[in-house]
Length: 499
Image 1 (tube, rainbow, N blue to C red):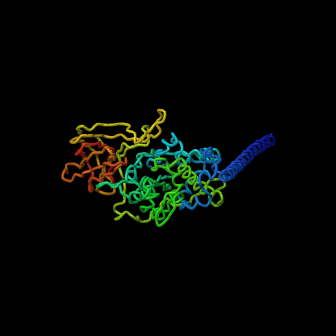
Image 2: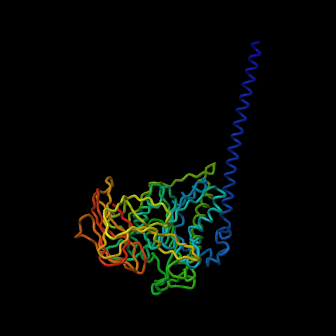
Image 3: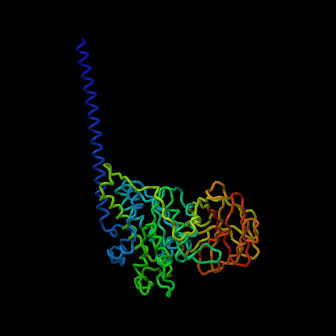
C-alpha cells in the first residue's frame, strides 16, 4: 500500500513538472516569436524608409518627383544644417518603441496658411499637415507610433511674444520636437518705439533657450522661409539678422529655403525665377511648392535619424527597444546675444487672447481681471485674416481682446504677481496688434502715471506688438491702465509677467 502511494506521488510530480516545462517552453517560444516580430518590423521599417517619399505622401498627385519640387539629391541636403542631432535621436527612439511622438509647431502666417488660402483655396498643404500625412502612411502602420501635433500658427506673431506665452498652448510638457517656422517671424518683426519687437535674434535666443531647458530636453528645428516683397532687399530672412550663429551655437537642425531658391551675389541674395515659384502670389508667404519643399526636407531629416538607429545595433536591445545615452542634464552653452546673462527669460506667466483657432483651449498661467473700464469693450473671435472662397473660411487664427477706439477711453486690469519665483522682482509686458487703423495710447503700472509709456502702433503690417512696461515689479496685486490719446483701434490682447 505504501509503495502504491509513493508511485502515485511520483506520477503526480512528473505530470506537474511536465506541465511546468511545457509552460516554460511555450513562454520561451512566445519570447522568440515576439523578438522575431520586432525584428521583422524593424526590417520592414528600414525598407519603407528607403522608398521614395514622394510616392506615398499627401501631395503625390502634384509633386511625385524631385524635379516637380525643383530639387535634386545634392542641393536639398546643402541647405539642411546640423541634421545629426542627439535630441532628434531620442525622438527616433520613441518611433522604434512604438510610442507616440509629440510635436509642436510655432509660427506666424505661413504656419496659419497665409498665401495658400488665396492661391490654393485650401490650407491643407501647410508643411506640418504634409509631415503628419506622411507619418501616418509610413511610420504608424509599421510601428504603431502616432504623431500627435499641435499647430500654433498666428499671423504676424514673433518670438518676442512666444517666448512669454508658448506654454499656454500646450496641454502637457511631454513634447519631443518643436518646429519654429521662419523662426517665428523674427525676420519681419517691426521695430516700434518702447516695443519688445526687435529686428534681431535676441528674442529668438530667449525662446530657444527656454525650449531647450525644458525637463525632457525637447528637440528643436528651425524652418527658414523668406519673402521677396521688397525687391531692393531681395530674398530676405532671419539669417540676415544673426540667426546663423544661434544655429551653430546650439546645434539646431535648420532648413533654409532661401539658400535653395535665391542667388547669392555681392553679399546679397537676389530674387530668381525659382524663388518666385516658391512664393505665393502676395510675395509675403510661401506657395504650395515652398511648403512641400519644407515638409520634404523635414521628412528627410527624420528618416535619416531613424535609419541611423536601425543601422546601429548597439542601440537596439533584443526586444527592439532602444537605450539612450543622451544626458537630460546637459548644460546649455552661454548665450550669444543675451547680455548680461541675468536677462535670460525665466518663469514667464501669460494671459492672452491670441489663438491659432477659436476652438483652441488656451491654458493661461496669469490671472487677470478688469477692475474698471470706460468705452472699452470685449470683442471675441476677431479673424487675423480670413478671406473666403464660395463662403468657406480657411484661415483660422484669431484673437479676443478688450478694444477701445475713442480718445479718452480707458481700461484698468488687475493681476497678481505670485511669490516664490527665483527672482524677487519681475518685468511686466502688455500685448497689442498693429494695423493701419491703430490709434495712440499710453500705459502705466499701478499709480505710476508719471512713468507711463506712450505707444503708436499704426502700420500697414498687422502684427503682435510686445510692450515692455516696467521692471523691478515685486510680488503682490498690481494694476495696469491703458488710456487712448488719439482716435484709432486699440486692442489689448494680453499681459505677461516674467523674471
